[in-house]
Image (cartoon, rainbow over all chains, first blue to last red; front, side, top):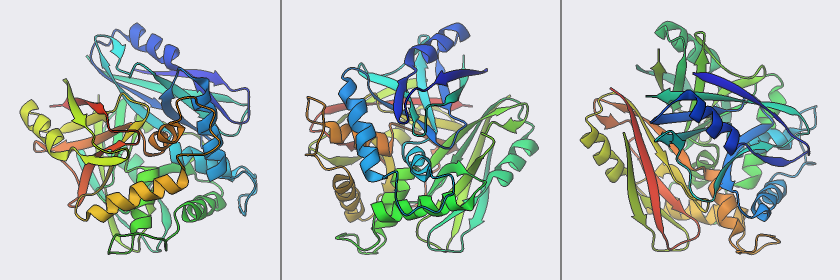
Length: 132
Length: 132
Length: 132
């Protein structure tokens, strides 16, 4: 079963917590055990997991990425958003998560984030659920 | 079903578009809905997705990675290609993509790339297709 | 089938080879062909593959990551381990590997590593095996 959710981002760089929406899809699917695959069909946004407790972790992650891949640099790409493409390739565009007893298996402090690197935009996440 | 494709790289650092070859395998398999898993059994090459329209994006991605992980640095590995190992760990060695109606679900501008970091070489990509 | 293994890390930054333990689970499962999904339910440790022959590759990978994401920097997160969160997002928290003829398909020099970035600690890896 494949589903799609839409995510509205509000800043240029933002980590949007989508954990509850993904868990809701898993619950609706009736899947008891298997895998839940997430995929972002974009090239300037990615997907990552990280701590969902202290928002400073998200801030520090975005800041560290901005320092590693400065927005203004010696890029050739005419649209001027090469840094967003690079950051998305660094964190990745897909994630697969295990499901057991109808629930995503995540660490206590782990949240799922859409990583916006060239917002604000309307983004999509494809969710594929496989198993029993 | 597992398949393997061979990719000939021509430069030291190169992003080789393999999207059409992967889509062809998906079509041949008859898979209507499920997942297509790609895996690179190498340690100095990886896999990533990114924009397939403006080739400058690929150039900028390789340049940004080269700046982050300089080829010549204070490395201990005797073969001298540590930077390639690091870059491959940063972009990753595997990718899973959703399939619906017999086609890979990719964004309009998204291509699948073998990321060569120590070429030119002959590389392999394992393709595993699961679903109905 | 989902399994869990525990990994004891011994240093602050460490790449612990877990290949043999994962292969043992695949063998016990009786799976002949399919996928083996690994997941780290932590936010300051990740998972990566890399060369298992020359230990200098592991050293160089950890050193390169430490240079990219310095431990002491202008972070806001109160626990002081933001660098570990960032590094984990860079290498990733999950990996899916193909299985054929009852064995993980890995390159000759490829090992699976739990990447500890804030140890020593007791870590867990969830292993989900799907296929026939």
